[in-house]
Length: 151
Image 1 (cartoon, one colour):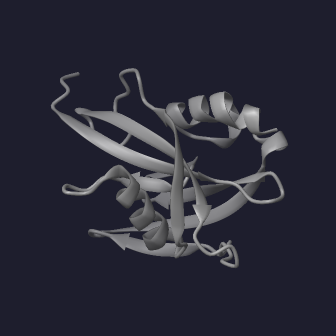
Image 2 (tube, rainbow, N blue to C red):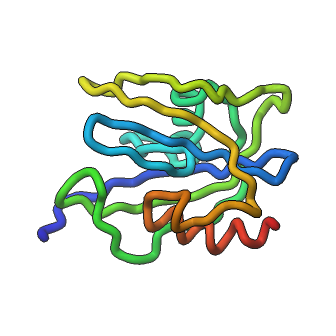
């Protein structure tokens, strides 16, 4: 496979007082997956700004980006675009206003000419199984490396 482009994705790990992490299940026309919240970096945007924007667009939550957790350090082809190499960057985040609540209702977003359905949900850290609960290899690595330390 010839790689001709990079895709940079930025994700946030949001924890609550009940030792839970926020996950999102996304449904696209031909693909369903569960991941940490976040999305694609746009030109002219920093990684932290990207994460703040993605959380607001997808969940309506205002967040503060805290510590860097992990950046992909191996070759990972994109699951969405043949010929793209994926770089993923993960941060721990917190709510800007602690009184905010996460809507657990399913929402539909229109991105370009496609509809995408999202459902956010909290997962107990002591019940999180990276292989079963997360769809993508890099998310699984982050869960194994970081989330186990949170227990």
